Image 1 (cartoon, rainbow, N blue to C red):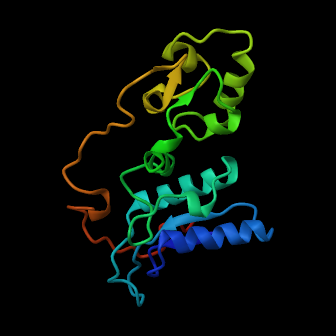
Image 2: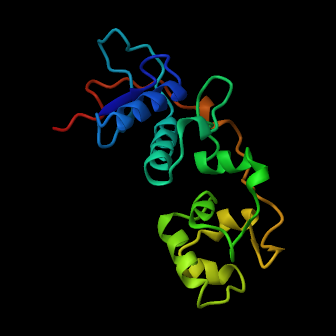
Length: 196
């Protein structure tokens, strides 16, 4: 099933809730998202294109629901019901739940590790499997197991020692992702997703 995002005023919360409802009912296997692009000589040719990052964030949220056990109610939405374009949904969730962090690498369950930004299903399984026979000493050991340490370090402790004091840092941009400053209004003659 493919959803064209931004063609209607529906919020990301509405879209993700409907997708979760369809998953629960067995109606779909997976969903596809496509950012709206105006097409010439159609009733919506003057409607502004949706930011491509919105499409990307919806894919990430969908992945969190299907592969990480997140529920719709756990995702962090802004006041308009949309996912923040400037943050990965997993990082947005982690930053909005400071009470759940830091997580201790040597004792955390696989489920707890899976909620840490930078740790996916494979890395969380490897950590749990390896910690019985290996003593983790630092970020290099975790990196070898597939952890993206630049994301995970601020959310972890190792033997009670914080691996990084800053939970998340990002470079500031000149404008917000949702503003699309400087982007021209492009109209297409055919749908950008059309295969020829």
